[in-house]
Amino acid sequence: MPDIFDAYFAQQVINGISLGLVYALVAIGFTLIFGILNVVNFAHGEIYTVGAFAGLLLIVGAAPPLLAVVLLVMAVGAAAGVGLERLAFRPIRRFSDEASLKSRAMREATLLSSLAVSIVAREVMAHVFGGEMRIIPQAALLQDVITLGPLTLTNGNLIIFGASVVMLGGLQFMLYRTRVGLSIRAVSNNVLGARHVGIDTNRTIVATFAIGSSLGAAAGILVGLYDGNIYPYMGFAPGIKAFVAMVMGGLSSIPGAVICALLLGVSESVATDFLSSGWKDLIAYGLLVVTLIFFPQGLFGHGRERV
Image (cartoon, rainbow, N blue to C red; front, side):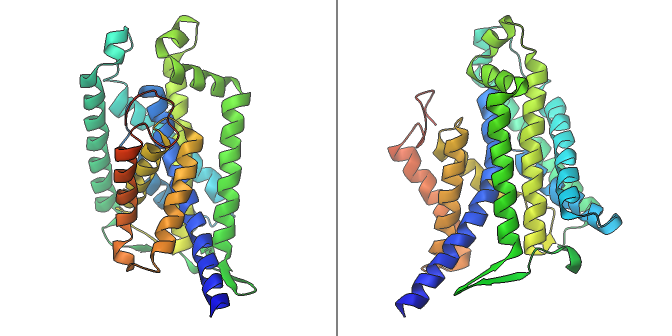
């Protein structure tokens, strides 16, 4: 009995890591945008859905290899992120002085603008593709069974893990070893200071939206291929979980968001031993409440501001 229990627990942990890595890819988009604009992008969950439907259209229309699907979906996500920035963020933001930069009115207006775009995008996709689930073609599914002793995995677990590690590693390299990444870090640290030393802040913000959105779109198609279906409202729950991971991680800490996303994914997966699957969402909200009460600056916050 203990061996069976241990194997089952290990199985749940592995499933939780896969789930947590998906949350991490989405949470990074939240964190990047918050770090550079100090506002929450509530339309980010719809980028996840856009990636899933773009991938389905590619698979049905051309059936390219998986790597090509993911790369093309990331390109679509980047384009969607640029469009989102132009539509919902650029008309509102003002960086002319310190007061406008920290204006609560501007932050609230931007939040509401992104929320409105989120609702409109969700309903447009429901109108275009229908509100019911769309089934992924059998040949493209990531559900091939792999047995490792008492553990049963799928190739989807391994592909999600590998793709997530590569994308997260690439992001860290880009942030610390490229001019674009250094510009993003500079603008995140001080927008006005970055502008005064000659950094094009608008271009840097657009690049941030493109990078974060490409990761979110990739997460959408990977989950769609793993689950076997997609639907227009699929981005809401992962978006909320990713937002929780961002808050727990300290709002602007990318490593913090990734670690908290993994914690959230494993906690949800293991909790199914004690709760029915319909109650597992309580885990995310419970961890959020605990964080806000006992760690108001997040688990990995640096005193920038209270959550």
